[in-house]
Amino acid sequence: MAFQKASYGIKDLIKTTCWVWGLHMQIAPTYTVLHTITQIILSIQGLVNAFFLGYALDLASEISSSANPQFSDFIPLIILVIVVNLVFQTVTLVNNYCERLLDIHQNLKLRTFLYEHLNKLGIAQLENPEIANRAQRFMEATGTIANHLALFTTLIGRTLTIVSSGIVLLKTIPLLVPFYLITFLIKWNFNQYYVRKLWLLNLHNTEYRRKAFTSAGTISDSIYLKELKITGGFDYIKHKYEAYVGWFIMEIKKIRNKWAVSRYFQYVLDVAGLGAGLGILLNQVIKGTLSVGQLAFHFRTLSIFSESIDAITFQLVNIRESSIKLADALELFEKFPADEDGSITLEPTVASPRIELKGVNFKYPHSKRNVLEGIDLTILPGEKIAIVGENGAGKTTLVKLIGRFYRPVGGEIKINEINLNDIKVDSWHKKLGILFQDFNQYSHLDVRENVGIGDVHKQFNEEEIKLAIKRADATDFVNKYPSGLEQILSEKYKEGIRPSTGQWQKLAIARFFYRNAPVLILDEPTASIDAVAEAEIFNNIYKFIENKTVIIISHRFSTVRNADRIIVLDKGKIIEQGSHEELLKKKGKYANAFKLQAKGYE
Image (cartoon, rainbow, N blue to C red; front, side):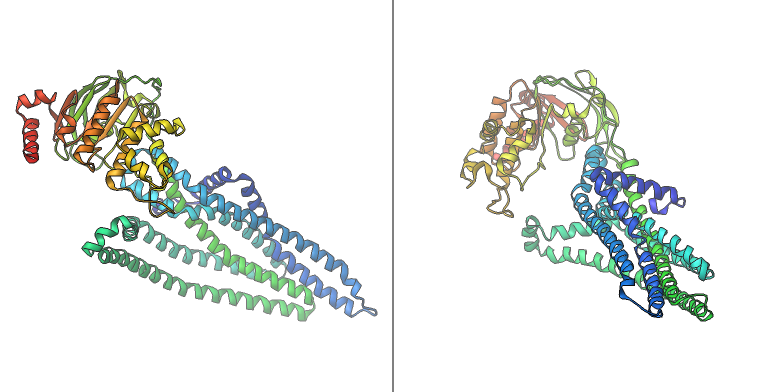
């Protein structure tokens, strides 16, 4: 992990900072450049005002001791101070303005970099726990990304302040400069130690934190609350969240308490340095080598130097901590690149392709056994096949392989004699319409959008949307919605309503009809729909979906019996295939299961 790299140093910090700079330049280049320049200019404001104060005191002493003191003698200095501070105030306003605008851009746009990359990684990689943990830390680090540039520019400003004030102090109190450099090293080591402790605590508990946040989301979601209220599970899940939070806060407090003690002794060193510096300066005033104005200027410069030394230790610790967190996030982009896409683009025709699986084997990452073994299957253009089998037989996995959400670990899948891995995945997905059992419910969208999102390239063709709704047997309840196609589908929004589970499923099927792709795959699409409605929907599927390849996964034999061919999967292997009548004659696994289901209906 990034923080544990012994070699982590200045090169890694620069690399991460350049990456953050690049992100900011993509988000808002003008504000990024202006914020950096103004932050550097503001670093000398304190020293400039200290000089004016010292000069004003000496000028006042000189004028007051003259024979004819006049207030007008101060006017040039007053005008200069006003002009210079107006310039600094203008720079401050520009700096604050850029910072606010950057915050807005960052909050709205930074997450898109993560979402776009996760989308490119693909389904298979997203199920990797390490990627899930890194994505969680990236989400938690979005504020760090937003703050990293400010940390870096502030660090540059502080460095310039230390250099400029240190040059001034070398002329009057040279011995204190190395003293403060030693305190800097002491502070750096102590503060770095405790920051590391905090980060490792955070790092090693990412998965526990994900579980805790999931628990918090569960007890605040009305979908889960119904069952939790009945079972009394609310208090149990709340306790799991509170137990983690309580432990995590206690661990942080232990580290913070020890850090606070070390910080107290660091402050003692600062005060000792200021006291010694004031003594040296006063002694020079007594000797007549330093004026009162110079005393004020040099003591204020010493204060600025001391404050900047203290601040820069934290600045360095914070930017290193920030860069370490972001290096971990950056590795999500570098260590886990998107799967290499194919180079062949399929022609955008409406014709169904030939799909051929040859000796396909597959197992999930971190699994020891194959889910599919030696699958040989050819699906002809326009053929309507059904895949049946017990839970865990590999039906849905087979669909995910055809959809290229996963890649076989053995064998190959060919589309019109082209290896699926060699095809650009987007061009293949345009030929697919897949309705999974865990279909999406876009509760923040209206009916039109829920159906039309099935093919956004059609720009929500209303006539086709209505036709798709009709074919999904959803017209009656959609017409009863107060807002019809404009009905928002969640009671959590103003004038919204919540569809029943069966209504959601019909809307998902309407989305499937609307897509009208050459290859249509349905994975248990009617599990929440009554048998009469299911029969109507599948009659429409067989009636309206002509010259298209249809792959149906279902446990209901009334759904699959009209397929051209039925594939029987068992423990990851094809054990039978044929038409409904052919399989009944074989009196094998399919026939036995059909008889058991028919007996249940009787």
